[in-house]
Amino acid sequence: MATRSPIVQTIETFILDQERRHPAATGELTNLLYDIALGTKLVAAAIRRAGLVDILGSAGETNIQGEEQQKLDVYANDCMKNALAATGRVCVLASEEDEQMTTFSTTSDARYAVLIDPLDGSSNIDVNGAVGTIFSIYRRVSTGPEGELADVLQPGREQVAAGYVMYGSSVMLVYTTGHGVNGFTLDPTIGEFLLSHSGIRIPEVGKYLSVNESNFPRWSSGIQRAVRAFHGEKPEVMAGKNSRYIGSLVADFHRNLVAGGVFLYPGDSRKPEGKLRLAYEANPMAFIVEQAGGAATDGVTRIMDLVPTELHQRTPLVIGSRRDVEFVATVLEAPAS
Ligand code: AFP
Image (cartoon, rainbow, N blue to C red; front, side, top):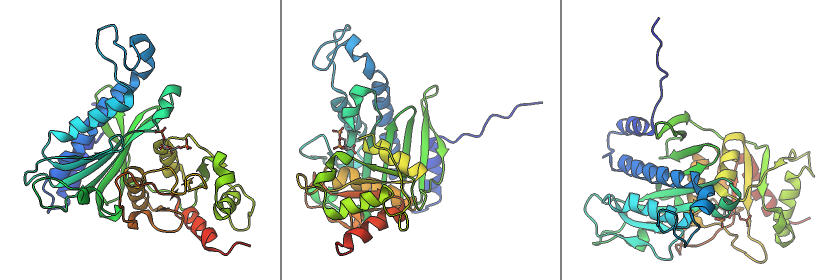
């Protein structure tokens, strides 16, 4: 009897299928997503060799082949920028690693503005922890000869696509174009991302709580009350959750997206705006989580309705299972008892 080969869908065929369902699509966004996927494959390959850096030479040194070693976050930034820059599809590229955005002289095809966090959670590299690349794509709004700041300072609700790649025990790419959320796992033997998690939905109530509790004394009393409720202090209003915190947004977010949970990085008395960046981290994750049935706020206000005024602006972030995120807003809005 003939054996049938398993039906696998690569990210390329999946994106093409999606494009066919939208007759107005020109294919430019499809190509842009390919470019990003390619850049992340190069980053993934470099991360796999990260532990060898002591053998091959550390950053700033030359390795045994006489090549200059680059720090991984610098390398990831270069990889992603190179993958996007030469394509002619992007009018402006902003990276969390760079102070200034990069603008390109445009052709009529350069219809997109892209923001990237090339290696989020990079302090985890030294301990062999999971890290990620986050991306966010907007339609160009400027009309001049080059992309402009206005193209990358749009509210998150204007995103046309967003996603992340998690470099963990396997490499996974998760993205949305506003029609649900799908996840692809890199098969290293063939170098392809294969559809592994289709139509991801986040549970309405999560079982995990992800927050850096060392900041507890510096939080507002409202955030302290909400977190105590998540600990199980008020079982009549909120069932207690399990704590899980890696300190790498992509990894913490991904676990909660798949298994259900809430992630908080609130402001505190030292950092009133919190730590995370609105444009590079909060907005793309907010788009993904909403598309999966979850929610994202700065505590009270929907993340994707915030209007950015600066490229590297920070925002408090509460993101994950919808009812947990709403619970935080209810607690923050309630008069302190
Ligand atoms: P690094 O890239 O410096 O490791 O920061 C990671 C990050 O931006 C985000 O991925 C984490 O969720 C958050 O910071 C962790 O911050 P704390 O170490 O303050 O908990």
